[in-house]
Length: 78
Image 1 (cartoon, rainbow, N blue to C red):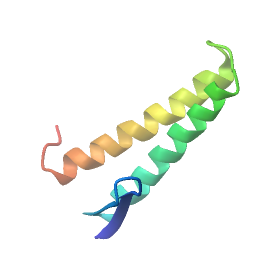
Image 2 (cartoon, helix red, strand yellow):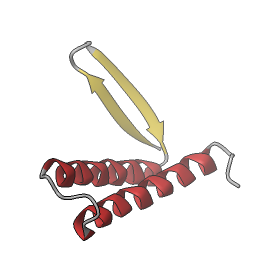
Image 3 (cartoon, helix red, strand yellow):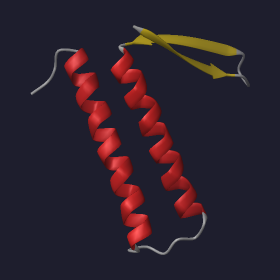
Image 4 (cartoon, one colour):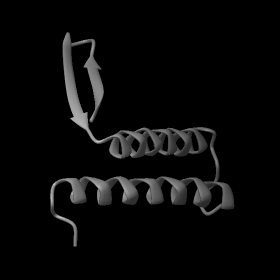
């Protein structure tokens, strides 16, 4: 198990979550892909462009992997 620490500094809150290492890695990757997608959109990339589609697709794949790992960890896998 690894720890993910989330902090809401404005509220003075600190939350620690334990998760298997693979899930921590998948969570980090998903966050990075979401941030990359946000940056592409913020840069004014036009809808329907290959850059926007590629970025959204990378995020979607990463999120799907994270969801699958979470469901498996909870014993809810299909």
